[in-house]
Length: 355
Ligand SMILES: [Zn+2]
Image (cartoon, rainbow, N blue to C red; front, side, top):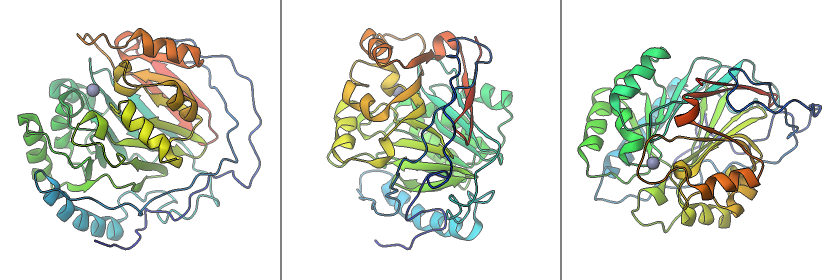
C-alpha cells in the first residue's frame, strides 16, 4: 500500500527557533512538589535537530483483529484529513510554517486522576482536544469530561488495549472522536468491543499507529509506533506520543516495558530524544518500565505517574529511586490528584495539581 504525503505530515521538522535567537537560560526556582501553582521553569533547548519519520512507515495488516477495519479506515480518514484540515487549526495546517511563526497561547496537558491507570487530556491553544488513554472507569472519565467541559474529542489514541487504559475511552467515545489511533492488536475483551462499537456509532475514523504526525491545532503530535518484533503482547506494543509545542516537549509511551524501549533506542528514533519538560512514567512506575539508558535519552525534567490503589506495588522503589537519581521531579496522581501542565512555546510552563 502506498500513499501520498498528507498536509499534516512533514518531510522535515525543525524547532521554531533553530535558526533564530535562543531563549536566555533563566534560572528559576524549582517548583514545589504539590504547589497549587508552581513557578515556571525554563530550559534553553533550542537548536536541536529533530527529524521526522512521518509517512515512512507502513501498516502491517494481520487478519485476526480489527486491522482490516483499521486499514479501510486509514484510507477514509486520510482523505478526510486531507480535505478538511481537521487538525490543521491555526497557522500550521500545512506543517510548513514552523520556521516562520512561533505558536501562541498554551498547550494544556492534564494527567487525570483516574485511580490505577493512565488518562491524559490534551488541549491545544485553538481548543482542539486529544485523549491519550482513558483510565479504567467510564464513570470516572465522564466526571472528568464534565469537569473540563469536554464535548468533542478531535483525536483519541489508545496506547495499548489493556483495561486500565481503554475502559474510560468508552465514555469518551460519546464525544465523537474524529480520529482514533491504536496499535492494531485488538483485545478480545467486552470493554474493547464496547469501545469499537461506540467509535463506529460516532463515525470515528480508525488508523493504526504508523509514525504519523498530526497537527492538533498548533501542537504537533508525533505517533511513535511499536518496534518490529514485539509479538502480540499489549504492553510491549504500546504506542508512544511526542508532543511538540514550539520548545515545549512532552513524551508518553504507555506501558512500554524494557524490551520495547530498548528496541526504540536501538532504532535511534529521533522522537525519543530529550530533553522533555514533561514525561509520563512508563507502566505506572513498574520495575520493568523505566531504566537508566532510556532516561539518559529522554532526559525528562518532570515525571508524572498515573497510579492509584493497586496490588502490583506501583510505583516501585526501583522506579522512584531511578527518577530521584536522575534529578527528575516526581508527581503522582494518587498523591497529587490531577496534575496539569500548561506549556508555552518558549519552553516555559506552569504546573498545577489538585493537592
Ligand atoms: Zn497500565
